[in-house]
Amino acid sequence: MAIFVYAENINGVYKKAAFEAVAYAKSIAENAGDSVTAISVNPTDSSDLLYKYGAEKVINIKDEGLKNFSAKAFAQAVNEVFEGKIIVFPHTTDASSVAPMLSILKNYSLITNVLETPENLSPFQVKRKAFSGKGFMHAKSETEGVILTVSQNSFGAKENPVSGTEEIKNLSVSNDDTKVLSHEQSTGKLDLKEAEIVVSAGRGMKAAENWGMIEDLANVLGAATACSKPVSDIGWRPHSEHVGQTGKAIAPNLYVAVGISGAIQHLAGVNSSKTIVVINNDPEAPFFKSADYGVVGDAFQIIPALTEKIKALKGA
Ligand SMILES: Cc1cc2nc3c(=O)[nH]c(=O)nc-3n(C[C@H](O)[C@H](O)[C@H](O)COP(=O)(O)OP(=O)(O)OC[C@H]3O[C@@H](n4cnc5c(N)ncnc54)[C@H](O)[C@@H]3O)c2cc1C
Image (cartoon, rainbow, N blue to C red; front, side):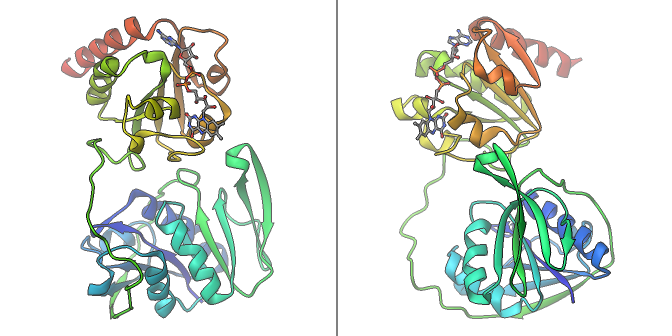
Protein backbone atom coordinates (compact mmCIF):
# COMPACT_ATOMS: atom_id res chain seq x y z
CA MET A 1 0.00 0.00 0.00
CA ALA A 2 1.41 3.36 -0.98
CA ILE A 3 2.69 5.90 1.52
CA PHE A 4 0.77 9.14 0.91
CA VAL A 5 2.02 12.69 1.25
CA TYR A 6 0.23 16.03 1.11
CA ALA A 7 2.23 18.28 -1.22
CA GLU A 8 1.23 21.78 -0.15
CA ASN A 9 1.23 24.60 -2.67
CA ILE A 10 0.56 28.30 -2.32
CA ASN A 11 -1.22 29.79 -5.33
CA GLY A 12 -0.29 26.64 -7.24
CA VAL A 13 3.44 26.78 -6.42
CA TYR A 14 4.84 23.94 -4.29
CA LYS A 15 6.29 24.97 -0.95
CA LYS A 16 9.82 23.96 -0.01
CA ALA A 17 8.33 22.06 2.95
CA ALA A 18 6.29 19.95 0.49
CA PHE A 19 9.52 18.60 -1.03
CA GLU A 20 10.83 17.71 2.41
CA ALA A 21 7.56 15.90 3.20
CA VAL A 22 7.81 13.92 -0.07
CA ALA A 23 11.44 13.00 0.72
CA TYR A 24 10.36 11.88 4.20
CA ALA A 25 7.49 9.79 2.77
CA LYS A 26 9.98 8.25 0.32
CA SER A 27 12.26 7.15 3.16
CA ILE A 28 9.31 5.37 4.84
CA ALA A 29 8.29 3.81 1.53
CA GLU A 30 11.80 2.48 0.94
CA ASN A 31 11.83 0.81 4.38
CA ALA A 32 8.37 -0.65 3.80
CA GLY A 33 9.01 -1.70 0.18
CA ASP A 34 6.23 0.67 -0.97
CA SER A 35 5.81 3.60 -3.32
CA VAL A 36 4.85 7.24 -2.66
CA THR A 37 1.63 8.90 -3.80
CA ALA A 38 1.48 12.69 -3.47
CA ILE A 39 -1.79 14.62 -3.23
CA SER A 40 -2.04 18.30 -4.09
CA VAL A 41 -4.95 20.71 -4.42
CA ASN A 42 -5.08 22.87 -7.57
CA PRO A 43 -1.31 22.96 -8.25
CA THR A 44 0.00 24.87 -11.25
CA ASP A 45 3.59 23.66 -10.80
CA SER A 46 4.65 20.58 -12.75
CA SER A 47 4.43 17.16 -11.08
CA ASP A 48 8.05 16.67 -12.24
CA LEU A 49 9.05 18.64 -9.14
CA LEU A 50 7.52 15.93 -6.92
CA TYR A 51 8.93 13.03 -8.97
CA LYS A 52 12.35 14.54 -8.25
CA TYR A 53 11.91 13.84 -4.51
CA GLY A 54 10.55 10.33 -4.97
CA ALA A 55 6.78 10.52 -5.61
CA GLU A 56 5.90 7.74 -8.08
CA LYS A 57 2.34 9.03 -8.39
CA VAL A 58 0.83 12.49 -8.11
CA ILE A 59 -2.91 12.99 -7.65
CA ASN A 60 -3.86 16.54 -8.60
CA ILE A 61 -7.21 17.54 -7.15
CA LYS A 62 -8.97 20.06 -9.35
CA ASP A 63 -11.69 21.89 -7.49
CA GLU A 64 -12.75 25.47 -8.24
CA GLY A 65 -14.35 25.62 -4.79
CA LEU A 66 -10.94 25.13 -3.16
CA LYS A 67 -9.32 28.26 -4.57
CA ASN A 68 -9.49 29.67 -1.03
CA PHE A 69 -7.95 27.70 1.82
CA SER A 70 -10.16 26.11 4.43
CA ALA A 71 -8.75 23.36 6.66
CA LYS A 72 -12.07 21.53 6.81
CA ALA A 73 -12.72 21.56 3.05
CA PHE A 74 -9.12 20.64 2.20
CA ALA A 75 -9.25 17.74 4.68
CA GLN A 76 -12.45 16.52 3.05
CA ALA A 77 -10.83 16.70 -0.39
CA VAL A 78 -7.72 14.81 0.76
CA ASN A 79 -9.98 12.24 2.43
CA GLU A 80 -11.65 11.56 -0.95
CA VAL A 81 -8.38 10.35 -2.48
CA PHE A 82 -6.27 9.09 0.43
CA GLU A 83 -6.58 5.31 0.54
CA GLY A 84 -3.58 4.30 2.61
CA LYS A 85 -2.53 3.78 6.19
CA ILE A 86 0.16 6.49 6.38
CA ILE A 87 0.05 10.09 5.16
CA VAL A 88 2.75 12.70 5.70
CA PHE A 89 2.07 16.46 5.90
CA PRO A 90 4.60 19.29 6.14
CA HIS A 91 4.34 21.08 9.49
CA THR A 92 3.36 24.40 7.93
CA THR A 93 0.58 26.64 9.22
CA ASP A 94 -2.02 25.44 6.71
CA ALA A 95 -1.02 21.79 6.41
CA SER A 96 -0.81 21.37 10.17
CA SER A 97 -4.43 22.48 10.42
CA VAL A 98 -5.57 20.07 7.67
CA ALA A 99 -3.85 17.06 9.29
CA PRO A 100 -5.93 16.99 12.53
CA MET A 101 -9.18 17.35 10.55
CA LEU A 102 -8.18 14.36 8.42
CA SER A 103 -7.25 12.46 11.57
CA ILE A 104 -10.86 12.88 12.79
CA LEU A 105 -12.34 11.90 9.42
CA LYS A 106 -10.20 8.74 9.23
CA ASN A 107 -10.07 7.94 12.93
CA TYR A 108 -6.29 7.60 12.55
CA SER A 109 -3.85 8.84 15.17
CA LEU A 110 -2.02 12.11 14.59
CA ILE A 111 1.69 12.54 15.38
CA THR A 112 2.90 16.09 14.79
CA ASN A 113 6.37 17.61 14.44
CA VAL A 114 8.17 14.33 13.69
CA LEU A 115 11.93 14.66 13.51
CA GLU A 116 13.31 11.38 12.25
CA THR A 117 12.34 8.37 10.17
CA PRO A 118 10.14 5.96 12.14
CA GLU A 119 11.71 3.64 14.71
CA ASN A 120 9.09 1.04 13.85
CA LEU A 121 6.37 0.74 11.20
CA SER A 122 4.01 -1.69 12.91
CA PRO A 123 3.08 -0.46 15.42
CA PHE A 124 4.16 2.91 14.07
CA GLN A 125 6.62 4.65 16.39
CA VAL A 126 8.58 7.83 15.80
CA LYS A 127 10.55 10.57 17.59
CA ARG A 128 8.85 13.95 17.72
CA LYS A 129 9.55 17.42 18.99
CA ALA A 130 7.83 18.38 22.26
CA PHE A 131 7.55 21.46 24.50
CA SER A 132 8.35 23.93 21.70
CA GLY A 133 11.55 22.08 20.85
CA LYS A 134 12.87 21.92 24.44
CA GLY A 135 12.36 18.16 24.57
CA PHE A 136 11.65 15.03 22.56
CA MET A 137 9.08 12.32 22.79
CA HIS A 138 8.77 8.85 21.26
CA ALA A 139 5.17 8.48 20.11
CA LYS A 140 3.45 5.24 19.21
CA SER A 141 0.30 5.00 17.09
CA GLU A 142 -2.34 2.62 18.34
CA THR A 143 -4.78 3.03 15.45
CA GLU A 144 -4.98 1.27 12.11
CA GLY A 145 -3.38 4.19 10.30
CA VAL A 146 -1.33 7.26 11.17
CA ILE A 147 -1.15 10.89 10.07
CA LEU A 148 2.17 12.68 10.46
CA THR A 149 3.43 16.23 10.19
CA VAL A 150 7.18 16.64 9.58
CA SER A 151 8.99 19.37 11.49
CA GLN A 152 10.47 21.78 8.94
CA ASN A 153 14.19 21.36 8.21
CA SER A 154 14.37 18.20 10.33
CA PHE A 155 14.78 15.71 7.53
CA GLY A 156 15.80 17.82 4.56
CA ALA A 157 14.49 17.90 1.00
CA LYS A 158 16.62 15.00 -0.22
CA GLU A 159 16.37 14.35 -3.94
CA ASN A 160 15.50 10.83 -5.05
CA PRO A 161 14.36 11.08 -8.69
CA VAL A 162 11.84 8.56 -10.00
CA SER A 163 9.68 8.43 -13.11
CA GLY A 164 6.16 9.18 -12.02
CA THR A 165 2.61 9.34 -13.29
CA GLU A 166 -0.06 11.97 -12.75
CA GLU A 167 -3.77 11.55 -12.15
CA ILE A 168 -6.26 14.41 -12.28
CA LYS A 169 -9.13 14.10 -9.83
CA ASN A 170 -12.04 16.50 -10.35
CA LEU A 171 -13.88 17.21 -7.11
CA SER A 172 -16.45 19.70 -5.91
CA VAL A 173 -16.12 19.77 -2.15
CA SER A 174 -18.36 22.21 -0.30
CA ASN A 175 -16.32 25.15 1.01
CA ASP A 176 -19.05 27.38 2.38
CA ASP A 177 -18.13 27.65 6.06
CA THR A 178 -15.90 30.71 5.70
CA LYS A 179 -16.00 33.55 3.20
CA VAL A 180 -12.80 35.48 2.42
CA LEU A 181 -13.68 39.18 2.53
CA SER A 182 -10.28 40.65 1.62
CA HIS A 183 -6.63 39.67 1.34
CA GLU A 184 -3.92 41.62 3.10
CA GLN A 185 -0.31 41.23 2.03
CA SER A 186 2.29 41.35 4.81
CA THR A 187 4.97 43.98 4.33
CA GLY A 188 8.01 41.69 3.97
CA LYS A 189 9.26 41.04 0.46
CA LEU A 190 9.96 37.40 1.28
CA ASP A 191 7.68 34.93 3.01
CA LEU A 192 9.17 34.62 6.49
CA LYS A 193 8.18 30.97 6.89
CA GLU A 194 9.77 30.01 3.56
CA ALA A 195 12.91 32.16 3.73
CA GLU A 196 16.30 30.40 3.76
CA ILE A 197 17.86 33.33 5.63
CA VAL A 198 16.20 35.53 8.27
CA VAL A 199 17.62 38.69 9.84
CA SER A 200 15.77 39.37 13.07
CA ALA A 201 16.07 42.19 15.57
CA GLY A 202 14.88 43.02 19.04
CA ARG A 203 14.57 45.78 21.56
CA GLY A 204 18.33 46.34 21.37
CA MET A 205 17.65 48.36 18.20
CA LYS A 206 16.16 51.09 20.45
CA ALA A 207 13.67 52.61 17.95
CA ALA A 208 11.70 51.92 14.78
CA GLU A 209 13.78 54.36 12.75
CA ASN A 210 16.91 52.24 13.31
CA TRP A 211 15.52 49.35 11.28
CA GLY A 212 17.02 50.67 8.02
CA MET A 213 20.32 48.91 8.81
CA ILE A 214 18.48 45.63 9.52
CA GLU A 215 16.69 45.90 6.16
CA ASP A 216 19.97 46.74 4.40
CA LEU A 217 21.62 43.62 5.85
CA ALA A 218 18.58 41.52 4.92
CA ASN A 219 18.68 42.89 1.37
CA VAL A 220 22.33 42.02 0.78
CA LEU A 221 21.77 38.54 2.19
CA GLY A 222 18.51 37.97 0.29
CA ALA A 223 16.86 37.47 3.68
CA ALA A 224 13.44 38.03 5.20
CA THR A 225 13.15 40.25 8.28
CA ALA A 226 11.72 39.21 11.64
CA CYS A 227 11.51 40.62 15.16
CA SER A 228 10.94 39.77 18.81
CA LYS A 229 7.49 40.10 20.38
CA PRO A 230 8.00 43.39 22.27
CA VAL A 231 9.16 45.03 19.06
CA SER A 232 5.90 44.25 17.29
CA ASP A 233 3.89 45.00 20.45
CA ILE A 234 5.39 48.52 20.60
CA GLY A 235 4.61 48.93 16.90
CA TRP A 236 8.20 49.26 15.64
CA ARG A 237 7.54 46.37 13.24
CA PRO A 238 4.38 44.67 11.91
CA HIS A 239 2.95 41.71 13.81
CA SER A 240 3.54 39.50 10.76
CA GLU A 241 7.28 39.64 11.62
CA HIS A 242 6.91 38.48 15.24
CA VAL A 243 8.61 35.11 15.78
CA GLY A 244 8.52 32.88 18.83
CA GLN A 245 6.14 30.87 20.94
CA THR A 246 3.26 33.26 20.35
CA GLY A 247 4.41 34.34 16.89
CA LYS A 248 5.60 32.45 13.83
CA ALA A 249 7.76 29.36 14.23
CA ILE A 250 10.49 29.37 11.60
CA ALA A 251 13.34 27.08 10.62
CA PRO A 252 15.60 28.88 8.12
CA ASN A 253 19.10 27.74 7.22
CA LEU A 254 20.51 30.90 8.77
CA TYR A 255 18.96 33.00 11.56
CA VAL A 256 20.76 36.23 12.46
CA ALA A 257 19.53 37.66 15.78
CA VAL A 258 20.46 41.27 16.48
CA GLY A 259 19.85 42.86 19.89
CA ILE A 260 17.60 40.01 21.04
CA SER A 261 18.18 38.62 24.54
CA GLY A 262 17.13 35.04 23.69
CA ALA A 263 14.21 34.53 26.08
CA ILE A 264 12.80 31.01 26.11
CA GLN A 265 9.59 32.20 24.39
CA HIS A 266 11.64 33.69 21.54
CA LEU A 267 13.82 30.58 21.20
CA ALA A 268 10.70 28.39 20.95
CA GLY A 269 10.02 29.81 17.50
CA VAL A 270 13.55 29.89 16.10
CA ASN A 271 15.56 27.08 17.68
CA SER A 272 15.00 24.76 14.72
CA SER A 273 17.09 27.08 12.53
CA LYS A 274 20.13 25.30 11.11
CA THR A 275 22.68 27.97 11.97
CA ILE A 276 22.12 30.75 14.51
CA VAL A 277 24.26 33.89 14.63
CA VAL A 278 23.77 36.16 17.64
CA ILE A 279 24.91 39.79 17.78
CA ASN A 280 24.52 41.32 21.23
CA ASN A 281 26.53 43.78 23.34
CA ASP A 282 25.95 41.78 26.53
CA PRO A 283 28.29 38.75 26.70
CA GLU A 284 25.89 37.23 29.29
CA ALA A 285 22.87 37.39 26.95
CA PRO A 286 21.15 33.96 27.15
CA PHE A 287 20.92 33.75 23.34
CA PHE A 288 24.67 33.01 23.14
CA LYS A 289 24.00 29.58 24.69
CA SER A 290 21.95 28.62 21.61
CA ALA A 291 24.22 30.32 19.08
CA ASP A 292 26.47 28.60 16.55
CA TYR A 293 28.34 31.89 16.13
CA GLY A 294 28.26 34.86 18.48
CA VAL A 295 29.48 38.43 18.13
CA VAL A 296 29.74 40.50 21.32
CA GLY A 297 29.47 44.16 20.39
CA ASP A 298 27.34 47.13 19.50
CA ALA A 299 24.87 46.33 16.72
CA PHE A 300 25.02 49.95 15.55
CA GLN A 301 28.68 49.47 14.61
CA ILE A 302 28.60 45.81 13.61
CA ILE A 303 25.56 45.72 11.31
CA PRO A 304 26.60 48.51 8.87
CA ALA A 305 30.18 47.13 8.79
CA LEU A 306 28.90 43.60 8.15
CA THR A 307 26.60 44.82 5.37
CA GLU A 308 29.46 46.66 3.67
CA LYS A 309 31.73 43.61 3.96
CA ILE A 310 29.11 41.32 2.38
CA LYS A 311 28.47 43.87 -0.38
CA ALA A 312 32.20 44.00 -1.10
CA LEU A 313 32.45 40.20 -1.13
CA LYS A 314 29.50 39.96 -3.51
CA GLY A 315 30.98 42.60 -5.76
CA ALA A 316 34.36 40.85 -5.86
C1 LIG B 1 3.52 34.07 27.42
C2 LIG B 1 4.66 34.78 26.75
C3 LIG B 1 4.84 34.61 25.40
C4 LIG B 1 5.88 35.26 24.75
N1 LIG B 1 6.07 35.06 23.40
C5 LIG B 1 7.14 35.63 22.80
C6 LIG B 1 7.40 35.39 21.43
O1 LIG B 1 6.66 34.68 20.74
N2 LIG B 1 8.49 35.96 20.87
C7 LIG B 1 9.35 36.77 21.58
O2 LIG B 1 10.31 37.29 20.99
N3 LIG B 1 9.10 37.04 22.88
C8 LIG B 1 8.03 36.50 23.50
N4 LIG B 1 7.79 36.76 24.80
C9 LIG B 1 8.61 37.80 25.45
C10 LIG B 1 9.94 37.27 25.93
O3 LIG B 1 9.82 36.71 27.22
C11 LIG B 1 10.98 38.42 25.99
O4 LIG B 1 10.49 39.42 26.84
C12 LIG B 1 11.30 39.03 24.64
O5 LIG B 1 11.64 38.01 23.70
C13 LIG B 1 12.44 40.01 24.77
O6 LIG B 1 12.60 40.69 23.57
P1 LIG B 1 14.00 41.30 23.16
O7 LIG B 1 15.03 40.23 23.24
O8 LIG B 1 13.81 42.02 21.88
O9 LIG B 1 14.21 42.42 24.27
P2 LIG B 1 15.14 42.47 25.56
O10 LIG B 1 14.91 41.31 26.45
O11 LIG B 1 14.97 43.83 26.12
O12 LIG B 1 16.61 42.30 24.98
C14 LIG B 1 17.28 43.26 24.22
C15 LIG B 1 18.67 42.75 23.98
O13 LIG B 1 19.35 43.68 23.16
C16 LIG B 1 20.70 43.77 23.62
N5 LIG B 1 21.22 45.07 23.20
C17 LIG B 1 20.91 46.31 23.70
N6 LIG B 1 21.57 47.26 23.02
C18 LIG B 1 22.32 46.62 22.08
C19 LIG B 1 23.23 47.08 21.11
N7 LIG B 1 23.49 48.38 20.92
N8 LIG B 1 23.83 46.14 20.32
C20 LIG B 1 23.58 44.82 20.47
N9 LIG B 1 22.73 44.35 21.41
C21 LIG B 1 22.09 45.22 22.19
C22 LIG B 1 20.61 43.60 25.13
O14 LIG B 1 21.85 43.15 25.67
C23 LIG B 1 19.51 42.56 25.25
O15 LIG B 1 20.05 41.24 25.30
C24 LIG B 1 6.74 36.13 25.47
C25 LIG B 1 6.55 36.28 26.85
C26 LIG B 1 5.52 35.62 27.48
C27 LIG B 1 5.35 35.82 28.96
